[in-house]
Image 1 (cartoon, rainbow, N blue to C red):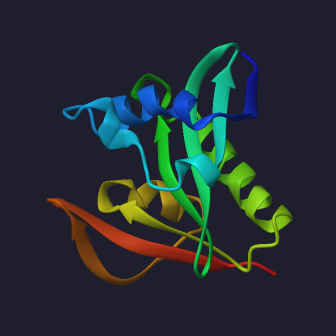
Image 2 (image 1 turned 90 degrees about the horizontal axis):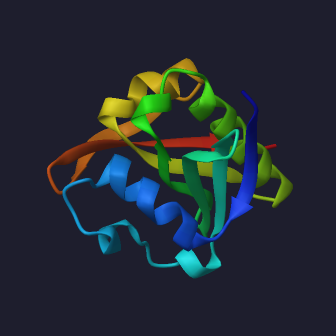
Length: 137
């Protein structure tokens, strides 16, 4: 199977964002202020959209938001390929920092990819998060 990452529109990311991140909420919950100005990416396995992520210019650099991989395709290296692509996009766009708020449930994935949480745990609703940041050279 062939995996490809392409630029997509914000609206293309919404169904998978909702399915993975907010399945019990309306699709509108998956929209983010600034979606219209962000860079959006879709990961396609053959022609099926299986992974989405968005990059936002937000101090102190480029922020990753709404990173979601279809559960049926998790554990196959797709998220790792997307994360690597996003880091390169941040660097290519001149960001000094690549950062995001990671759900604690996803920390093992990020740690396997060389990221470490910083600071204290915080909550968005009832979901615990940790901040992750990487300086870009």
